[in-house]
Length: 411
Image (cartoon, rainbow, N blue to C red; front, side, top):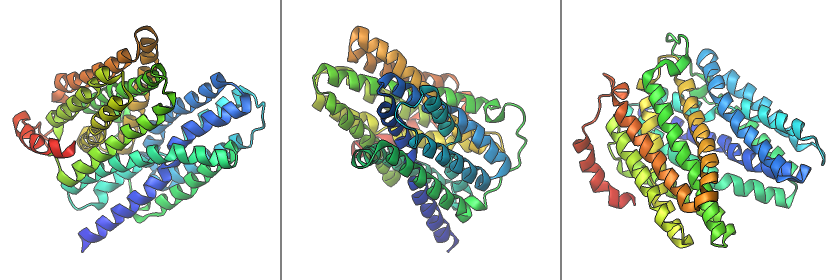
């Protein structure tokens, strides 16, 4: 009975967290469109949206550390209220608003965005019955979060077209505030307490294992940023610019499919060896984009295939955090993972943009595959940091056997 109750509580927490996280991807595109409407400049709009993304990466670990010290309730409700208030302020700005004011508000919105994903992942081990259930829940989380990226931007754009860009932003802020308050009111979140470990100086990053995971996800972020630029450049060269959005949507759908397959079938991938294998699949899948860059249909097929490794990659990484993070720093550790991907995506976008300008979209896709290869090499080179007594390294041959059996079904 306790197991059933815990599972129901976890599912309810999942559902609320998805709704609460839905506004976060809408803020990026919503701020871009709204700033463009107010200033008439794509340069200014890009600066506003970029500032928001950078602040999101800065604020996550800081708020995560606060959660580890003070619990979830106060930090979640306080940060959601601050972020929603700033969203409301920027939504009310008049046409011709000064760009520095918009940038400052965007920075505040990103800095104050509540660390909902990190809080969910630290709460799950406290309410689920065993480690296998926790690992499955991490895979499910990495899967369903794709829904926020698939559904969020089209919703805010449609609402902005039907009403106004400011109204769409304000609505997103209201959803964030109400849904975060509902999440914080759940017993699993309200009753969560820090483990009380010795945090020490340096927080979660004083752990060699956490530093390895952060480096790996920076490389994965470079892959993501390079693919986004490569898709935009390839569709522009083919005269099908409007296809970029649907193609990236298929990329997210591929991740969703891969995650659902992993939840249903299970792959047994864990530890350093499991992480190296799933990263290798991620790199190889996106390497095929180099050959597919000349056709929208070919890119669509490859993006679904390559994307199918994204959610499983996140799931394996999430399952390693409990052992990798020093006691008392779990929320901060999960937040650092998001920051690592954001840093990598920014680097990947910048480098891939230059590569695409000079050598075409295939160069951007080659950069993505190279970043995936680097992530594999990092895991192999630093595998000792990822091996612990509670989570031994997995024998490669033992992992390959079940993975080979499930791979055709996953695709």
